[in-house]
Image (cartoon, rainbow, N blue to C red; front, side, top):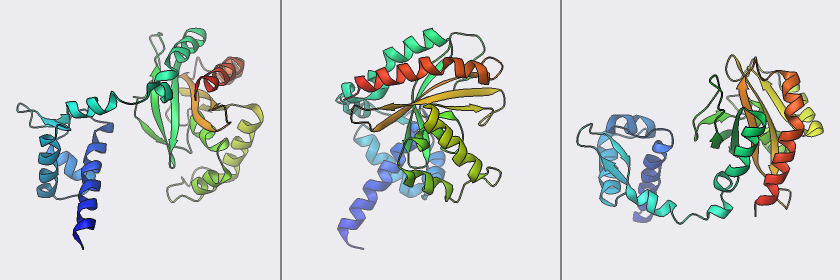
Amino acid sequence: MDDGKLTVRAVERALDVLICFTDSAELSLTEISARVGLHKSTVHRLLASLEGRGFLVRSSATDKYKLGLRIWELSAHLSHSDDPAVALLPEMERLRDTIGETVSLYIRDGLERVRIQAVESTQAIRRVAPVGARMPLYVGASGKVLVAFETRQVERDLLSARDWPASLDPQAYRGKLAEARKTGFAMSIEEREPGAAAIAAPIFSRSHKLVAALAISGPSNRLTADKMREDAPHLIAFAARMGKMIR
């Protein structure tokens, strides 16, 4: 392998190490090695380079690594006006105050959905997934929205994926997607976890490109099917307003 390919591979491995911190604040050398599938000696060299450049910091007390100031310096230059997670937060708070349940924003990444923003319900009993959480597209209201309103190729890729659950009937799933396209929203009751329910609607940009799924979630004893259908017009109206706020 030539030097160019070796250099690119080293960069890819370093980025893989940084990606490990999307769902963990601190990680040990052993934990990182297991996540990226590389030998500890290789990971140790990558960590030393990232620490030297300020992308990671190692705690002397726990011997674990966490993101360094260089990451925050880079993120300060993100265009917040183009970032849905920032631009749409005030409207999400208004929707939470209107409905009284947790409001979340999801985007599609391949055949997964990622929670990029959330406004928690003020009620004592609530259902909350952490920001940054990844879940499969085939489960949940927001997952159905992110498939139903995308190109049909996404639907075909999902239905032919190797990890498609044998317990989930493809024809029934297609029916739910068709219903979402017809009504403008999708619902789920105890699909991802017992006792949880959600309703979601698509957010489109001004060019009618699907940007994200706006979801309301909560305990299924409060968010019944009738209650979610009652809330659907509010959700769809907020989603439409949010779409106009995105460049």
